[in-house]
Image (cartoon, rainbow, N blue to C red; front, side, top):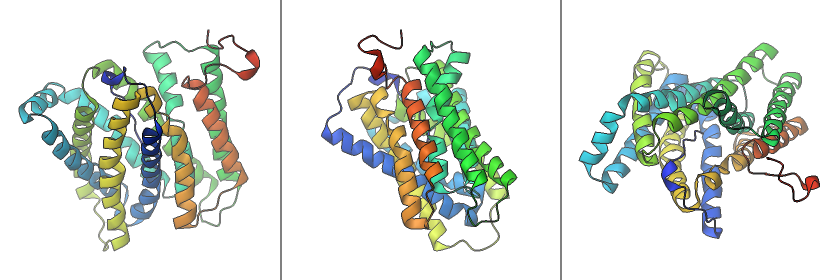
Length: 322
């Protein structure tokens, strides 16, 4: 998953038991997306699978958008912001989705879900370099720790034999593709902040998914597989489009509205748990100690880099980000 936040919900800050349950459901859905990609990409190929995902998601979100507000109002926003919506559609959906699908031709669903947890690290780094967002010493430490965790995870995948025919170079390329996807997520989040501030999240998601569909559709037609596609693969792509894209986005928007963007984005910390769990349960993927260690280090770094942890226990009452 991608994660563009709506700035219109800054006033909401509560997270009750019901919202916490919804956050867990969202993490389960986005964690399952890596499982469904793993199942569907072999039959469909990268571009056709992702074109179907964003197309189904765009149709779902468009129906919800039309049901919630006047069609003329939505059409006006989509028309006047067409170019930035297209850019975000490429950066936040079309390109990273394809990169993750390519990565899962080699990497397990669990590993790619862990790499996805580095998204906030790239968001913080790109925000610092591009938008000159302030990085405290603690947040900088979080970036370093987080990226060390990614290196640990990638090294574990290269060094540990997994019984597949993947070579170290193939594994490294797959990990690089997954990291490239999270980098694009970070760029997209900052581009959205700069060019789409004030546009509600539902409109942004609908417009960007539509743009991603337009971009990927020609590639899907060119690379549509000649061999018959299994029912398992069709089920995976439908689940990806409806549950992991349409429903998940709606749930995310709701959490932004009732709990605020900062709390909603904490779903990033829970997604790897479900990604690893679903991969182990349904695909029989192995979970190595190195993988768990890398996951833990990435999440610690992300917590520091995003400001979720604002001070270290041994510093006492003095704020560590001042």
